[in-house]
Image (tube, rainbow, N blue to C red; front, top):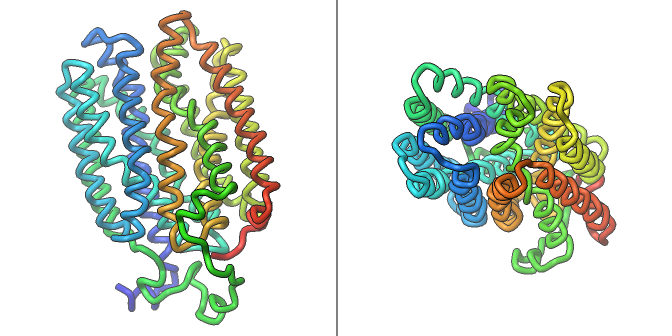
Length: 418
């Protein structure tokens, strides 16, 4: 494989990008389809909004919390083995969810088993891509991570069509098995880093790679985790991600409460998907030109606007615009994290660093959908949930300005090679 890669006119890193795109497309496509399947579950099983949100919250918490371990495993064993194991668990967990009868059944199958598989999707894929690139790191990560948003755009409508003809149980089983098999095939192309194949980041020659700026000796991970830049970055993503899954779980029901039919309400998920694809594709490319932090400021400000608009949106066009803006901002913020970590903390251990941030900042996001469901059951609407989400993202925006002014962090405004 190494010899053929060296002789190929196309840098093998782009095959890694393609494989990561495929894995994220399928893993997140089925995850974001939960908002479609949940309507059939609730109708057949008589579950409340909070009961349908709780298993999803458990799922988000577990796969986020385990990302620290899967990040370390990726650095140690390589992404191929880790992602293949995750593909099996993801298919098993979502497939078994087709037979649930009680909320605790779904908490076990999706909330635990599928979550184990999902924990080896985002961090290993994006961190591995970040290892293969330096000069074009933002662009490469953006392309790979856009698979998640494109999955959100394509898979939920397809799942809805399958559910219409076969019912939610059969449709869920088919989507789960198809996703797992395809992810296993894509994982075969995931290679740890360019050095494993006798190559250099970005496909540069040995002379160009040697001429890259030196970054000095990197501190131990334990020292890095206690440093202000790392802590502030965790807090920024904690505040924005705490509410990030609320629209994915509740926006279809929110649209129906606004008087939309099921089809039009489901289209709000597609609007998020459209925005997410554009956000993930553009954020990294833009950040390669203007710097990571200016790009991060834009995404967080846009998310404040999106959440702040939803409580006052009744017209379909405004609802679509707000959903699109949310997808654009969420997708952009997610795509920036691996590139930002690679710039700040080094290329060789980026999976471990991203995994810890994803675990610490992402696991609490499990509370968001459940809390929003509780607020709905208490107040009869989602307005307060969306306003709280807007306030949290405004706080994240302010903290990102503080982070950017820290000594030693300004290098991220003009990404260096690590």
